[in-house]
Amino acid sequence: MTVLAPPLRTQKTLAPLPAWPITAILALYPLWWALGLGVLIFPIMALPMLVMLLKRRAGGRRLLMPPGFAWWGLFLAAVVVSVAALGVDPPGTVAEHASDRLISVGYRLTLYLTMTVLLLYAGNLTETELPRRRLVKLLGWLFVVTVGGGLLGMFAGSFEFTSPVEWLLPQSVRSKGFVQSLVHPYAAQIMDLVGGDKPRPAAPWGYTNTWGNNFCLLAGWLVVAAWASKRLGPKVFAVGCLGIAIAPAVVSLNRGLWIGLGVLILYVAFRYVLLGKLWIIGAVAVAGAALLVALLASPLGDTVNARLDNGKSNGVRSFLMERAIDGFLDSPVIGYGSTRNTIGGRNSITVGESASCERCGNFTVGGNGQLWQLMFAHGAAGTIGYLGFFLYGLWRFRRDRSPIGIAASASIVTSFSAMLWYNSLATPLAFMVLAFALLWRNDAGLVGKRALKGDA
Image (tube, rainbow, N blue to C red; front, side, top):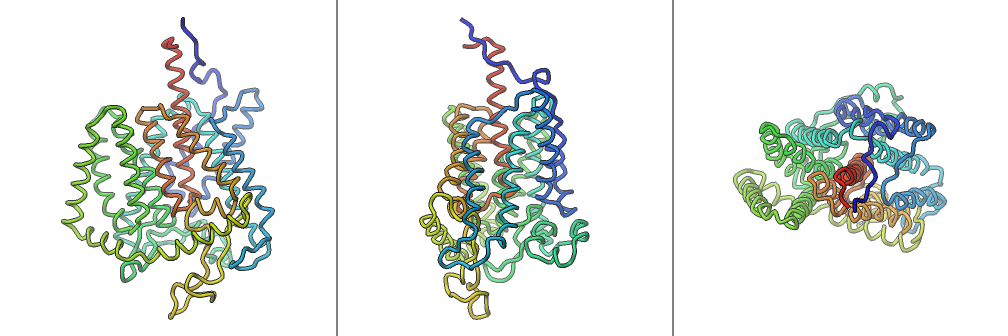
């Protein structure tokens, strides 16, 4: 007997939602970066998205919620409740009044709410309004932008300029380091990690670590977009872009990026092997051999060896990880509401670096990885809610064997490894929720197709 499943969501059953807010963010991101808007474009565009969702709801149309959204609700509640602990100064941290921490807390809360709106909006769009294939192409385009920014950082590491938004701000405001990171475009961060100052690609994502995180989150979408095309050109372009991307990925000296790519490749290969497509093993082997030859035949191999031999950040990360765990144990349920600055560093209790102690100074507890920030700032409630949402999504959509499904789940899996050393706000989390939205919409589309076929 035929069992009818829910029909496909179409323009007829849902109030129309325009795709331009999401399209504008993704397609024009280089422009926003150059204007000095950068990550600020997400909350700016979230306002019209929220208004249109509310109008749709007020019009009597049902607002669809993603599977497992209760977990995300728990996370948001924990972020709000943990503000009650802002006035507490954990041992070994710089004492501040709670009001001094409200700006950073408000910024993070705004971005978390922005990502919630982005998730709901992207998930409620229909195939008529924003086809999944088009969203995949937009994400693949941003990987091309990431590679372009990496090349800019390699060959013009000192490139920077004053953005229009920066010009409009008072000098007292735009001179602050946090504001600079938001509105001042630059190609690379100049750091001494392997002997001498070297540019590490950052454009257009603001920080080298964010650049590396987004590199991993977006790489799969270029492949999916190219192989969805029937033409040879996009495939050749994708292979060429991935080949060129090796250089800035290595020059970034970003070990987290290297590990993330390994996780990404292994996960995708595992999923394809489960599908019986054993050719993926040969493809990975050939790609690995080609990469090895490229490293041995070029100065890139020396760069990798130099970075592996110089783990200057290891001690700092271990120090901050220990402080985050200590803080979690002291306030395990709701955390401390935000990050804290340590009194000194791992080598000294003095505040501020000096010529004799470059490792001294304040470090940010919770600034060295999303996992540690969740544990320290929002306790078990926030950590469980955040992880629970994405883990439930992976489990809920585990049977999605489509290229979009595998790429989206691979993106989320990669983000879990990145949580150990990267923070997710703002763009990495945006790409994570868009991957979740694609899984969600893909599942709805597959259900609809089965219904149309009359499958049980």
